[in-house]
Amino acid sequence: MTPSQLSEQDAGRRPDDALPSPVTVLGLGPMGQALAAAFLRGGHPTTVWNRTPARADALVSQGATRGDSAAAAVAASPVTVVCLLDHDAVDAVVRPAAEALRGRSLVNLTSHTPEHARESAAWAATHGIRYLDGAILTPTTSVGGPDALVLYSGAQDVHDDLRETLGALAGTGVYLGPDPGRAAAHDVALLDIFWTAMTGVVHAFALAGAEDIPATDLAPFAVTAMRLLPDVVAGYAERIDQRRHPGDRSSLLSASAGMGHVAAAARARGLDTEVMDAALRLVRREVDAGRGAEGFSRLAESLAARTG
Ligand SMILES: NC(=O)c1ccc[n+]([C@@H]2O[C@H](COP(=O)([O-])OP(=O)(O)OC[C@H]3O[C@@H](n4cnc5c(N)ncnc54)[C@H](OP(=O)(O)O)[C@@H]3O)[C@@H](O)[C@H]2O)c1
Image 1 (cartoon, rainbow, N blue to C red):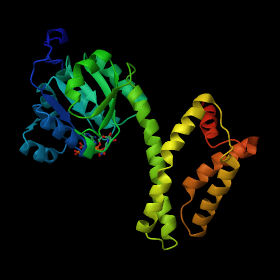
Image 2 (cartoon, protein in one colour; image 1 turned 60 degrees about the horizontal axis):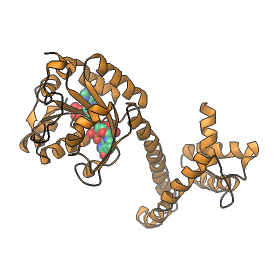
Image 3 (spheres, helix red, strand yellow; image 1 turned 45 degrees about the vertical axis):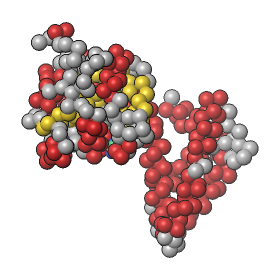
Image 4 (cartoon, rainbow, N blue to C red; image 1 turned 180 degrees about the vertical axis):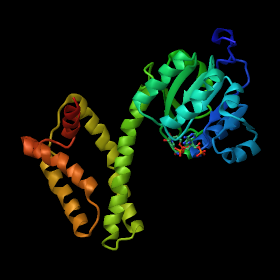
C-alpha cells in the first residue's frame, strides 16, 4: 500500500465524529509509561513496545496491547509516539520500522538537539512518514493533566491532524511552526536553565553541609532565593532583546565579588569548585574587558558573540 492509498484514519487524521484514534507508544521508560497511560485514560486503543518487554506489563494490565516488535506495534496504529533515552536509541528503534511507518504519523517526544530533530524529519520525509517533533517540558506526574506542557514543531498539517489525539497528553500543547528543530531549540535552552540550576542546588547543599547545616534547614531559604528567578528571567529577557544592560541595581563587578566568596568558601572546605570557577571566569572576563559596571544580563550577549 502506498501512502496515498492509506485512509484518513491510517494517517492519524480523525473525522469529528470518530472514536479516539489508536496510538502506539515506543519506549516505556518513566515518560513513555506516563504517555501510554494518558492515552489509555483518554480512551485511545493503545499499543506499546519497549526493548525490555517487562516494562510493558503494568500498562498491559491496564488495557494496553503489547506489540511483539517495534514494527508490529507501529502497524497497529495510525499514530506512533516515540519517547526514548536519546537520538541514537530512536534511530535504533525507528529505522528498522520504516516500512511499517510509511504513510503513518510519527511523533518524536524524545529530548534531543535541533540538529537531531531536523535529521529525523528529513529521514522521515524520505520514507513517506508524517513527522512531528516535540519536547515535553513538565515531569511524568503532569502528563495527561492540566499542568502538562508540550512544545511541537514540524509540518503544520501533521500537527493539525494530530492535535486532538495529542490533547490526551497535555493541558497545554504549543505549536512553534514548521521548522522541526524549533521545539528542540526551545528544549535545549530550557534544559540549560534547568541543569545549570540543579547543579547549583546540589552544590549549595554540599557547601551548607560542610558547615553542618542540614539540607532541610537550608531549603526554606533556598526556596525564597529561587522565587526571585521569575522576575529575573522576565527582566533579563527585555534587556537582552533591547541590548541594554544597566548595572544600576547590581553590576558584574559586584557579581564577581559575590561569586568569588562562594568559590573561596567551597575551596576552603575541599569541595569541587569547577562549576563556580567556570562561571566566575565568564564574569571576570567581562570585568577585565571594562564592562564591570554593566548588569549580569550582558553575559548573554558576550556568550553569543563568542559563538558568532
Ligand atoms: N522523566 C521525565 O520526567 C522527563 C521529562 C521531560 C522529558 N523527558 C524525556 O523523555 C525521554 C524519555 O525519558 P524517560 O524518563 O522515559 O527515561 P530514559 O531513561 O531517558 O529513557 C528510557 C527509555 O529508553 C529506552 N532505550 C534506551 N536506550 C535504548 C536503545 N539503545 N534501544 C532501545 N531503547 C532504548 C529504554 O529501554 P529499556 O527499558 O529497554 O532500557 C527506555 O524505554 C527523554 O528524552 C527525556 O529527556 C523525561
